[in-house]
Image (cartoon, rainbow, N blue to C red; front, side, top):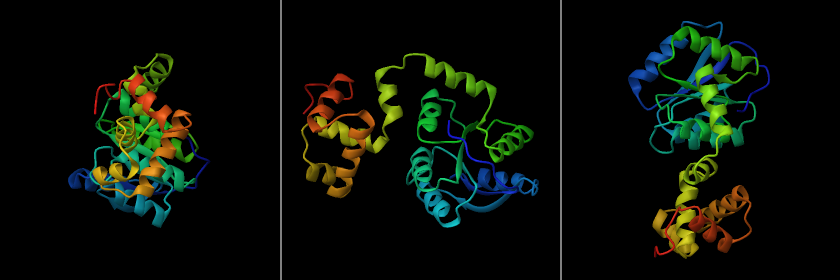
Length: 226
């Protein structure tokens, strides 16, 4: 799990959650600890979170997962790539190991559940300021267990690739051309090429043929799919 260098308190924070009531409640809670955090912005979608982070360059983004217009994991990946000094901590209701493992792979500095009490939340945020990962003992144990166990094929692939990359890989494996992939997914041909390049890099493959073979071998599509 990604950690950050030490930060100066109070931490500048962006809160990203599509539920207005929860977001406002969390901001109100943050405002009770001006010595620790200073909320500088809020976002209701993944795209807003990325845009706001780029604009404000906060110390910390508290990121929900299930959001429209780019989910929290996709936003985490983009922010991690663009802003080296911004830590992203997932704050979610999802206890799925799949999301936990993927968040770590995408550069999250922590993974917290919304059931956390306020005191522990502040303690873990304070740890981020010191360069520590924000994760409870329970979630850390599940993370370590997941790393130790052999994951099933579908989970491993999903940990490595974004949802969009998996869509592109499936279409490549079905023999669909880049222009047709672009048309089906409502994206540009250049974006398709970028996704394919990222897929090959992440899976350590060399070309479309290897990618197609990989997709069939890993069960992403049936060899008889058209």
